[in-house]
Length: 484
Image 1 (cartoon, helix red, strand yellow):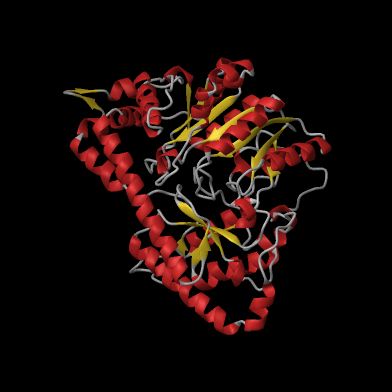
Image 2 (cartoon, one colour):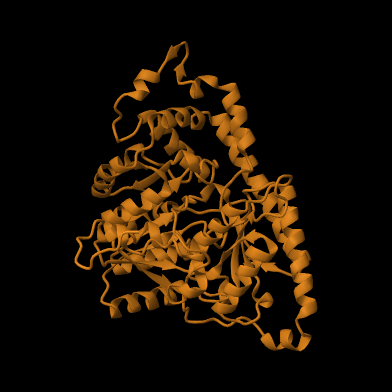
């Protein structure tokens, strides 16, 4: 091993050597442990079951059935003629018109045609990760801030901050009202940003929420729109789970709220400051295809984001295939209905299984996961206690779940548990393992101690960056794949 000389020139950039990517979060470290020992029902039945990946594998058969009936799309043919040469040559980074038209119609169909999408306002990106980062580059300079309600998707610390230099100011939400965002919480976050001398450029929400699995109520959307109008800032609505809302009151897009207040929106120039992110990773279960999109009525944002998209294009072959798939109205109608039915069925299986062993979930109506309260299983009502429980769940029980602290939750004891990336039988195995752990824990813990623990307290959130010693499980920081 060659010793480095103190004054030796730095070979890599500061960005390449910095430690702000977020790879030492328990969210990513759980994946690392899973990949060392993945569960398989026959070849590795004692391995770790992956419940930390929000992936939709419930409706693959519907897509595969369509592909079998439409071989030209996958075979890159248009009738008797091959389109290979046409697709293999240089592509315009604005995207194939046929695909953008089909995507715009599909997005409108998901919203019950209450919102119309102009294909010229769509910017294609390599997944929602690229879409969110491109929007940060468009809307914020280094050191500017976005307000994000907690708990939020752990990958945002990487996607929004790492290369852009933007800051995230958490909007603290609590279990007292089901983690719904309030005007008081938004105002508090705005004041905290000002104290840090950060210029707030906008609010970013996920709707439906990741990790809560709840569609944002219309009243909350109205309140958030009022807030951004009053502050003169942007609103980014990440709606990649829009097609997963399986029960009432259902999903309402922020664009539907804007359309209902069109004259007022024009007065405040809201149309130019509200932007939507979408992807086919969740609704169609195609994260490997890397298809994301930005939708904005701001021509300057569309222009800038389109230029940035040249660093992460969607391949012409992928666009051609999906243009045919999404253009089949009979298929999309049947798929959307059946996919929601299957998500609800698997969601109910998880909720009922947890209920049977004495574990409660936040009531939810969307997403590919549940927000699970396991605080009563912690030895101490603290974030250190949460990490201790999480390590037991990963190493002793063999389930990779995501602790609330990785999602910047302000209350210890909550976990995101995914259910759509496995078979029903595998989910049964997971519930059996967890049930045995709960039973053994209840026998071991003195009843008086359990009574004394009381309800979980809302805390001022000593988050993961203040407890990295508790999060680091193994050395190394190999790149983890993106959930989005």
